[in-house]
Image (cartoon, rainbow, N blue to C red; front, top):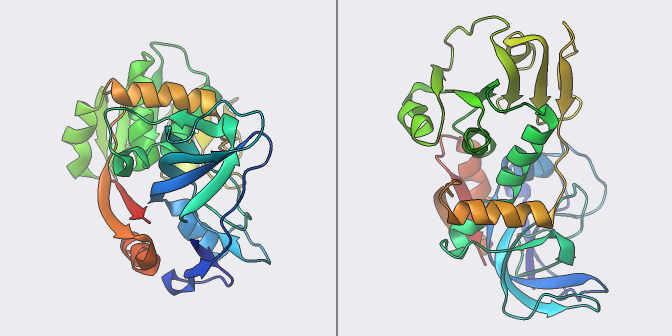
Length: 297
């Protein structure tokens, strides 16, 4: 089978399409025939060496497809439509492949209202948003600032925070105002616009603003970042944390249900065939995307 991998770190041209034996599921595992797999910023970070590694590394964290084979002790059946999140920075094979083997408890039923291309955009970004909100631990009625609210994680955080009863302010480029208000933001701030100091109970800093975002949190509030080790130092009694996302099939099942209910909007910017992964990475590097690039084997 084919897989997108890197054996050296660099730009988009570091990505290779390599041949591998079709993997076999072991006990408690499932093999998925990949129908679609989103391309995320974390894939670009892995490709460029942010997370290091000395062996060939497989790319891809998101997947939508059908169950193809199961190992002992698994209740999933062949041809079940599923989505899943495959975490890990140094795995030999990721989801940018024809097939992927994952632990059965990381899978969720695919949303029935979405095709595979759109469903493939959900696992990483929605799981990250949901786990970041858990980390912040805000109560209904409290105020949340989401920086980078126009991006994949940011927009889903706005949607989930609204659904949880938080008062949400989205911070993004000015052309995202109408979109974010439609997705549940109570207030909008354009990037570069001044924020009131200590004006929010919590902040999800999807844009990586660091100390500038922390300054917007009230004394004793909460800050959550998305890049462990890059979060600002705590001050004024603020709880500061950074999320290392974990695959969670039960949580993803609930998120899939919310997608079917229209709470979560799947956004696809562009699709590429798997063999054009280099071109897909180059397009991601250009920026300006409204939604995710999706690779189709």
